[in-house]
Image 1 (spheres, rainbow, N blue to C red):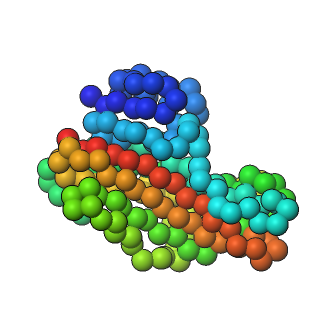
Image 2 (cartoon, rainbow, N blue to C red):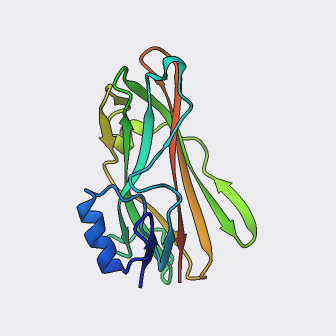
Image 3 (cartoon, one colour):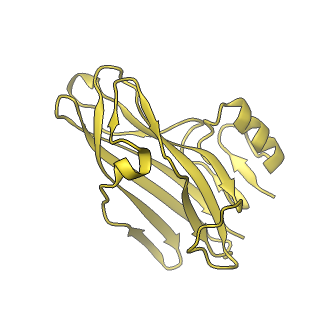
Length: 182
């Protein structure tokens, strides 16, 4: 059974799917046998506001699926895996954003450590473009994924996206979620 908390209380997976559909796929996270969303429903982490607060970049996880095909090639045989989509939006409506890099980090409890992938610049490959027009959005072309051994431990996954708006100001946004794999 999957339990979800994200402003809706505790829900069974079937209830979660219904809520997810009703929210237009904007429920922040769904995963594993239990999930504890760190973002409000539909939430995203926005980077520091540039002068005048004109450019706002957000990153949101949508359409989280657990143990559904296709199984990622590097997933161990007895592990759980999660596929999810990422949507990046410019919500200030004043200027576009050119994305320059991103990275994903993992916090595991045993031993307590954080491991981050190196910064990558393959935004065009992942999203089909590296530019988000003012008020626009881009969605990942192929679902992102993460796997975890069935340990019962909670794992936290974060991603950070960096770029510059049309006026050359730095912008940053990210997402964060946790999974428990049993």
